[in-house]
Length: 182
Image 1 (cartoon, one colour):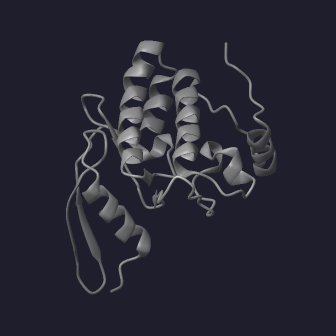
Image 2 (cartoon, rainbow, N blue to C red):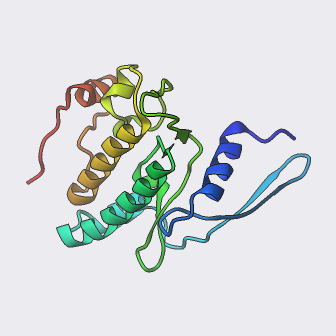
């Protein structure tokens, strides 16, 4: 069986990155029809469910979580790794509310200062405007945009750019049209 490229990429990156806020991969093996990954156990679910259950968080609780996200991504960016799909569903929590960034299947290596990525990927609600405009972009900067959207979601318990019509959602994101919560 041929291992899909996204899984190969994710495993390679997870083995490379050793950070307390990035999910660890312990082992991988395959047979003719299946691939097995042994990953760190994270028991509390994802940040999306946490926000839905707890509602908007106060600033202290939000910063406790957000600092961990920033620390993990700063570490990844130091190794020129761009996640490109940061969203609450890919951020897991353990029983101690320790963040674990997961799902590096869309990750990319930022090869040099002038290097720009071309592939639009990730989730529309968290995607940077330059991705939505089909421009070449820096993956680390796209990750920073996604982190800003995540912080907004943690503090407001809703998304800054949202609409049931995907065209309206994309237009609002491209233009930076959002409302500040009370």
